Structure formats: structure tokens, C-alpha cells
Length: 422
Image 1 (cartoon, helix red, strand yellow):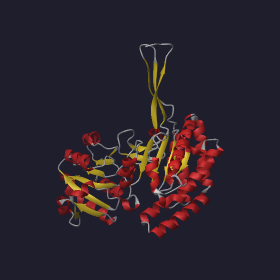
Image 2 (cartoon, one colour):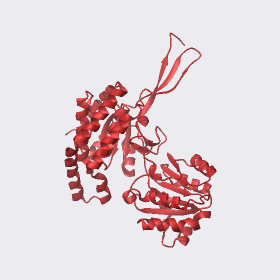
Image 3 (spheres, helix red, strand yellow):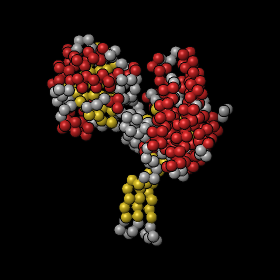
Image 4 (spheres, rainbow, N blue to C red):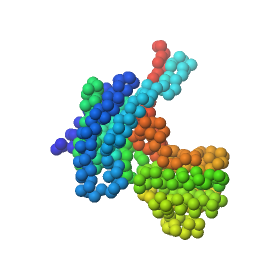
């Protein structure tokens, strides 16, 4: 691989050819291919664990943070979950060919709008190797070819997973270039592949904000973005009898994932002033007991003196750590305004017993996922019944929120006549 320019063009050209092949496959064939891949993942467990051991050894040498190492590990349980995930995607309704709308015009023309594959997806991601099989399966289900560029910390694991998938594709008589893996971690390749708009239809980066912004800067291909998960929970004035539920949800939303290092973990709690005195001491004590550093505005610190003071920068921060900031607000309107100004339009929740308050919150908060009386941690493709997700979009075009197979399609118009001339 001496010439990156030649290599990225080859990746793109092969992916485009494979995408045309995939677009012709019927739903039953795609299901059979995915089930074959799931079986191959289970049978390839030893090879996957061996490859993963190389990544873990290098992670140890590099001093990778324990939370990142934990996400990197492949074991029997995680490999089984990978195969299960592929099977769940296989079992879903095929989005390709679905009629979105259809009607007949006065001149007799039959107009149909139909779902079709996007074509070729370039996917950047970090750390967790299971994302490799999830992304490949979602693209195959939706009839798209995919080019994968995983993080260097999981290079050997990802390479082994793709090798298993490619073998399964060949055995099924499907173009193996439907799933390609970039065989280098050299960053000099990235700006070059981001110029392959002749072959690649969409770039999906799944990782830290710096990675996403760098890709947006260099790409001539449309990029579907997910910058940050600056998520909020607003605790409304109408919450009588909900104290235990509120406490459980707030702790779960912050601590359910080790270290709080996920995009759907809550970063900020907003309490209505009428419930602050009753609830803030309880919720803060629960969070502190769970190992969370609590920061608060002046009102919060009066009610919970152990809280550290917040700065103006806190409200715009996605901590990705066991840290949380708390603010007391005068009204639902103030909470909504705060979320829309400081949030990242990812996931925000209201805890309330007032139906009108819930309706106003869900209408006015401008986020991809809006929750009522539940944890923000449910903002996840698997939890939404999508089988898996290729990412969570904070964009509004062309998809928003957790993205499953249906979100990897676009549409085309089919116009059928019987000789009409305009």
C-alpha cells in the first residue's frame, strides 16, 4: 500500500460495484446472508479472541484508560451478542422497496415513492469491535456497501471480524467488497478517501467531536454528524409521589454505563424551584454515593453544600465522566430555553406527572430523542427495536436520532404511464 491515492480509489470503485450487486438482492437472500454471517461469527470465536488479545496487549503498552480497555474486550458473551445482533437485524422488515406513498394523477400517471439503498457508506468509528458487525449488518440489510475505518486500538479485532464477514459473503455468492476494511491506521489516508465523492454517497463518523469536525472539514462527501451528547433531565413542578422514581432515573441516566462515558448519559439536571428543596438533597446524595462528582449553581449549593460550584462553561460541556451539573429553574419555559441553548439536540428528558407539561416539553425541545419519565440511557438503536444502530444523528438531514437500516435508505420516484405525453 505505497500509493494511498490509488488505494482509496480502488476501495471506492469496488464498493460502488458491490452496491449495484446488493441493490438487486431480494429480502430473502439478504436474510440468508446475514444468518450465515451470524453463524460464522459464532464459529470464528477463537480467531476473534486471539486477534483481540493482540489489541489488548497493545492497549496495555499504550496505557489506554481502563474504561476504553473495557469497551475493547471481546469474550464469549460479547461475541455471542454480536452474532445475536446480526440475527436481530436479519429478522427485521426489509426497508428496500417499501412504498412510502403512492397515488394516481388526473392524467392517469401512477406516482410511487419507494425506499432504495443510499449506495456506499464510509463509516469511521472508535473502540468497540462489535460496532464492526453491527454496521456491516445494517448496511447489508439496507442494500448498501460499506467501507469501514475503525480505531487503531481495535485494529486486529476489526480486521478479524471483517475477514469472517467476507468469507461468509463469498460462500453466499455475494460480492465480498460489499464490506471492506481500510487496512491501515495511517491518518494520511483519511483526507484522500474523503474526496472520493464519485463513489461514496455518505460519510458517518461515530466517535469524539474532534474526529467528526476534522472529517467535516476535509470531506467533499455529505457527512451525517453526531457532535456531542450534552443530555438533560428536567424535573418538573408536578412530581408528587414520584420521588423514588426520580431518584432512580437520575442515577441510572448518569451511572448505568461504567464511567458515564456514553453519549446518552445525562450531563445536567434542571430542577423546578418548587421541588428543589425536596428533591435536590436526595438526588445529590444518591449520585455522590454512586461516585458522581456533583456541581451546582448557587441555589443547588445552598440545598446541597457538598456540590462544587459550576462555571459558565459547565452548561455546554459533555463530561463523558462521572460528573454532573445541577441548576434550579423558575419554570418549564426556562428549562426548555436552557436545553435548546446549551444542549446538543441529542437526548433530553422530562420527569413529570402533568400531561400538559410533558406535551409542551416534547413539542418544544429541539432534540432527536425526547423522553418522558424514563432514563436518557434508552436513546439507543437496540432499545428502540432497531436491532442495532450505525450511529445517533444530531443532524436534521437526512436522518435524526438512532439510525437503523431504514435510515440508511433514500427514495426514488417511480412514474408509470400508458402513453401519456406532456
